[in-house]
Length: 143
View (cartoon, rainbow, N blue to C red):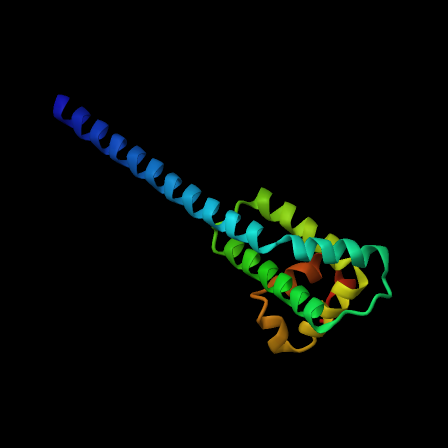
């Protein structure tokens, strides 16, 4: 009986240690992802969004358009990591709110619509276009 109790205790401690190690790896990976995403959402994009919010008729130059495309690709990567289980839902909901807010800017919305105009364009976003279409059909494409 004592031997069985020892085996159970050993298994429990082993499983607990494994869970702690997995949690530690998840946190490390998430911190790396979070830091990378935040670094890539840089001041240039934030400044551009703020400028565009004040003038919805401002024409984008090529560099600004490419910066928006870089941002949209970043959003797609964030979504990819969500569906791989590496981003907590609470974080994704905050990021998604920011994406939707930025897509309310006419110039950003226009570039986004151009990028997802084709099936292959939508596929390049790892399912993000479909996710956003569920929430806000006016942003994306016709089913």
